[in-house]
View 1 (spheres, helix red, strand yellow):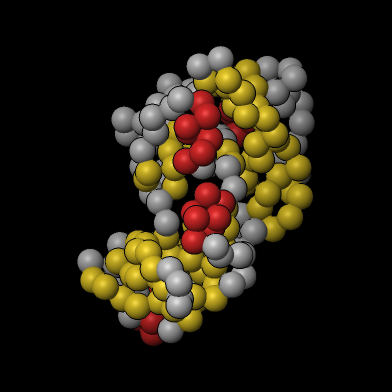
View 2 (cartoon, rainbow, N blue to C red):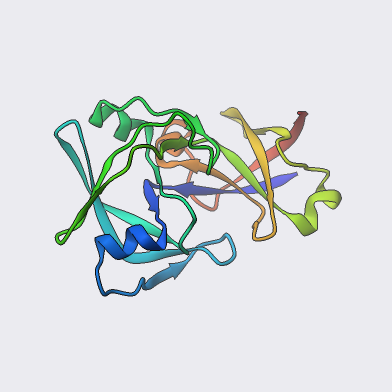
Amino acid sequence: MKIKIGISNRHVHLTKETYEVLFPGKEIEKRNDLNQVGEFASTDTVDLMYNGKTIEHVRIVGPFRNYNQVELLGSDLELLGLDAPTRRSGNLDNTPGITICTPSASVTLDKGVIRSERHVHVPTSKEVELDLHERDIVRLYNDTISFDAFVKVSDNGYFEVHIDKDEAKEYGLESGEEVNLEKCGK
């Protein structure tokens, strides 16, 4: 079967409490909706600091979560000299921290930095029809590339594979481009 590519850049998920420290008296504003139903890119950005180095203007993705998470690219981790694991969103045990800054405040996290693992979003309503279930392994390929990813089933899912900007560059893929999907197993 065919599936579209979605490319993710570095971004930050925040709790409401952390957002209020970083942006006192401000409500979060939507810049645009994302393909995953209910998620959006905020108009707000933050700077990330680690080891004396800074990555500026990192987008906040809403809505608020019950944990803070910073998703970086492999090239970002290299730039910062940060050893963060490739993980599924929300799996933050034994991950490094980072300092998040705005012009008015900063918050230092003791954990929460990951590189997001490649994954295929599958809407719960299509799980049986597509025979793609939570944590299944799939192979994505075209005439020139092949790589594996995990399936992520969710109510707000939009059938799409998510890779980060570094992976897109490595594989020569563009957002919206279609690749073949083949189920490999668990």
